[in-house]
Length: 70
Image (cartoon, rainbow, N blue to C red):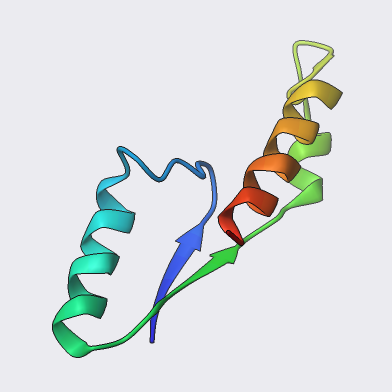
């Protein structure tokens, strides 16, 4: 099993790290497991008095992670 650590991006079509993980998995006859590192503290931070991450982005992130299950 090859583990792909998902931190800042869930992109699958143009993600070099995921592409490399798939290459390694294929060469070893293994599967790729996506492991998402969710850091609520990081999302709650503020910059210049504004939230760094809005509710729309958090919803998009959750939907993207659910899509990875497929």
